[in-house]
Amino acid sequence: MKKWLQAYSKRLEDERNRSAATVRSYVSDLNDFIAYAEEQGVKEVRELRSNHIQAYLSRLKQEGRKTATIARRVVSLKKWFRFLTIERAIEYDPTLQIESPKPERKAPLALKQTEMDRLLESIDPANRQGLRDRAMLELLYATGLRVSELIALNIDHVRLDMGFLTCTSPGGRERMVPVGSYAASWVERYAAEARPQLSREDKPEQALFLNVFGERMTRQGFWKTVKKAAGAAGIGAEITPHTLRHSFAAHLVENGADLRAVQEMLGHTASASTQIYQTPSGLKVKDVYDRAHPRARS
Image 1 (tube, rainbow, N blue to C red):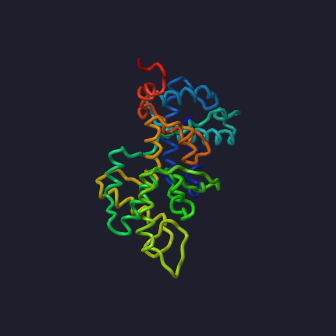
Image 2: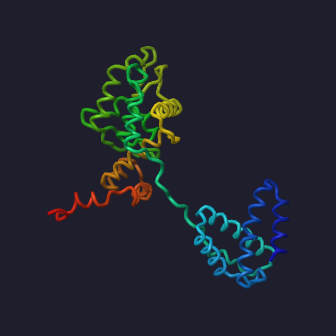
Image 3: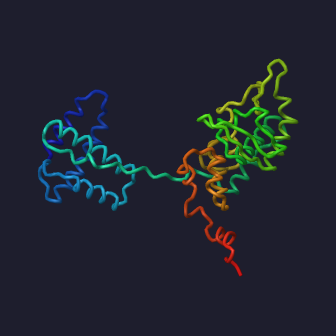
């Protein structure tokens, strides 16, 4: 088997746009597989079958290898066996029925409630920019909007008197999102006090949130706001505007909110995108049971 690995390595080295590091990675992966196959008594590539590959991948999993590592080994094996098929070293490619493991979907970073409180309260609303920034962060956390949806809001998209706003998802689907009274009060204060100072008579703008030039707030500008607030709040984790969206969803689910409702508020078209927030460590299962079951308490 080693001679076919050497031939494959030479082929990779001869290919353009193939770095030496990539070649070494492929060869290292295949050397590990060959060593395993030889332990099982397999000496020639033509003796290899799909069950050998499945057993090898199972062992990697038992050893605690990461999903990304196993997926990379599958890619290495598929490329090698395709080469062996082209070179007629084997009659049948045993990797045709082998699928790469699906990557693990982990819940994204979400701040603790105490961290979120510190983040929001770190912004000084004494001036027009501070008041705008506080209103933006309060609204983002209260609604779970994407930052692109937040900065795309126009004045007429927000109906604070009725407790909701309308926004358009990246796919073009419009949805209504509830707004809590606390966030609504900050947005109302911003609209009454700070926005008139930021707007320009010679350059009318329908955007709800304006920068110092009287123009619609940008993603980059808001990202700087979040970064500055995180530093002032003493939050060590690297957070982004999307962290507030994740925190919104995580805190709702932790407190027993229905996943379908959270999915609708986030604007997820697939339920799997929302289910990442429903982790055993995050759910207060006993609390939910005690609240929901009619005979949970005497």
